[in-house]
Image (tube, rainbow, N blue to C red; front, side, top):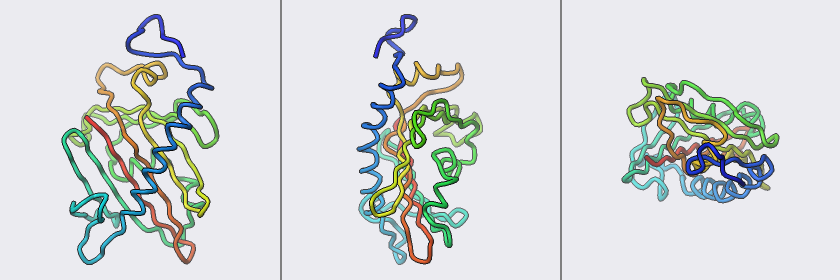
Length: 208
């Protein structure tokens, strides 16, 4: 890794091999966090909340999707869960990615694109929210990695988190009217259910 001469203190130039290695190892802890959150998010249909991980936050329903939101200081967490009948995890993953998952809970996402493919299941994405998005996300953007992994039990994980700001700046310079923030360990877990169906748990955790 070497510093960019033009902006040594704000951006880094990094080789594709080094970036691939960094993302692979950084995403390992993200995958474990998502699996842990998914296991502890057992939905209590009587009391309408997810236990342990989301605490006592109330769950609302939007378009048949259970959504919970929690704020703790600068940390904002959004968690959603929905069941897809007659859809296997493999079928879901052929169309699902970080971009589609973000649109699931915030249709005001104005721009989303892959800016670099490192491997078939490893890439770098830009997510941008416009001036009409929810107040908390207005004019924000995130430069994140996305890793898709199939676990031994057949469940599938999409791990997503921001790159360090110096690396992100080297890959994609920030636009003048956007505020670049950090997306912490986020993504989705697709669990196999009976009758070739699946349950999707999606977590979006950011700090600003």
